[in-house]
Length: 110
Image (cartoon, rainbow, N blue to C red):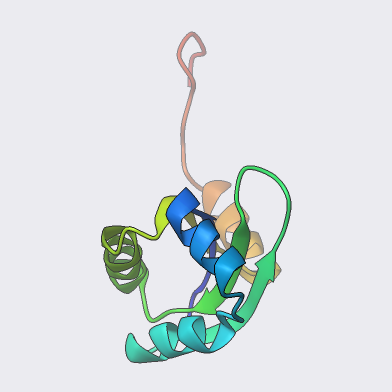
């Protein structure tokens, strides 16, 4: 199953709610991943542009997109960014395929 990194930033309303009533959101995120046939691998919070990051196994790109839309529509996030992650083995395979694709950039002759 593909891995995805989902970075998220809460709205000020969601942050205010969490400050007033702190809660561990792991179970909620875990249930969400499970509901779409996936599995939560980790939930982390950090400094910076995003408040946190979810790492999850999800069945496919369409499911990942649907999950992002559903969570985005809830109104609790200011922004999010979903990134498909690839294993080193996948990348080696992609590089090998890339080496067999004939391509010349603009200005260079094939």
